[in-house]
Image (cartoon, rainbow, N blue to C red; front, top):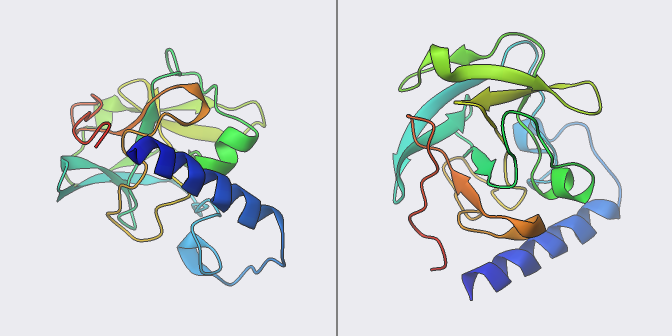
Length: 165
């Protein structure tokens, strides 16, 4: 049931993102929604936070980061509508290890559009457009775009708790 709700939420978010006017003054999460990708000025920072799912990776502002089980290796296979619902964490410099993370697990991969996506333990990292506040994990266990999405533990493994709830 949760997957159906998440799929409907993702579809509604995509439809809402396609219409209306846009604003460039919405802060890190866009203009009142979570439909825009936070754009780092230089280097992205990855750190950890704790919540109901345990300790997991977040960006510098506390927004949850996910891995997609369809990605094999460090190359991202999420683009188009997938990247609209699951925006990649991109960087213009070497990603920085914040509290609770290991610098040796951070890296980048070049996306098809030429941007650099942050990887952790070889997994490309993504946001979920349905998460509108720091620490939210509403994308956890979603099977959108043909594979499961999970928040990432500090060791780089998927946290599968909450799947199918």
